Image (cartoon, rainbow, N blue to C red; front, side):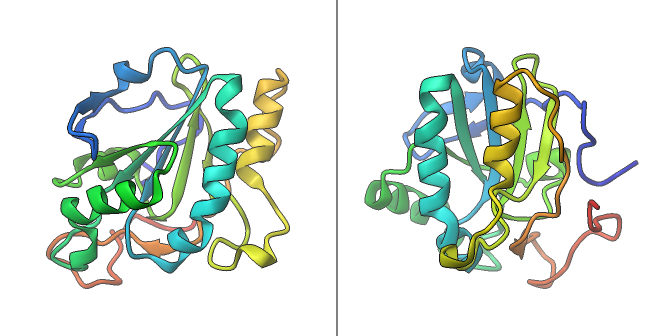
Length: 193
């Protein structure tokens, strides 16, 4: 079995605390026509470099019924900046237009097969996976972006077309797994394409 969810898979459910003090499950986003779940964190230069591009995408597609949910599964034992307290302060400071959840046990990251930060998963109304991978081709340096893979997938799906490139390799730092070296990845985690 592939480490990362294959296209067509149903979104794994979750129950995770958010920076707004509430706990969310998949059902809390049932009204979304399209749900974008992405694994992210506080410290990664690829996340920081692309946050404003992700913000622009989230705001652009919100009127079309697309909701974004960020999940931080990184172990604060590897990077203290990835603690829940830092998540709360980052959201207060940046006011990102998504719900920011904390996966302290890393069970949700394993269920989705998150490889890197950021790593995006796009689910249709039935919560079937229609796209996974990167949002852009240069997340660390937004000035060098030439491909908007996430927006292309959203545009195609919202136009009623099949997603032409449903899988790309996420670009970013690896997920920081608790008790492992900072650069460790599960042995069955590999490039998607």
